Image (tube, rainbow, N blue to C red; front, side):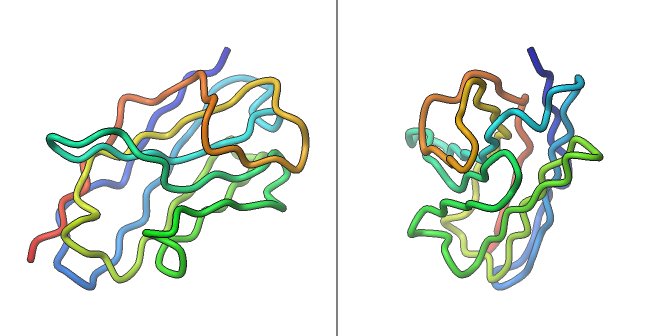
Length: 125
């Protein structure tokens, strides 16, 4: 079991940047693949990016590739999402997610079983 808490959301202008953080509880944070998902009003939740246990493998959605960067620090139980060149369509609630029982070197796009409460990102046009 792991508890997740996001932070860093806010309001930013088009083209600006935000840095989201996710902090996890417990001693086994390192064993989870981690990911960010987002959900915009009236839209389905969508995968944004995932990172493998050791942070060596990353998997980005096409919509954010080249603009967003995920990283993790297992010593601090944190995952970070650096978001650059933000667009209005990036506006959403961003959720941190953890995937248990995931093999090393895998950054899946689905199957996440633990979720944070989310943090709002609003990009104004």
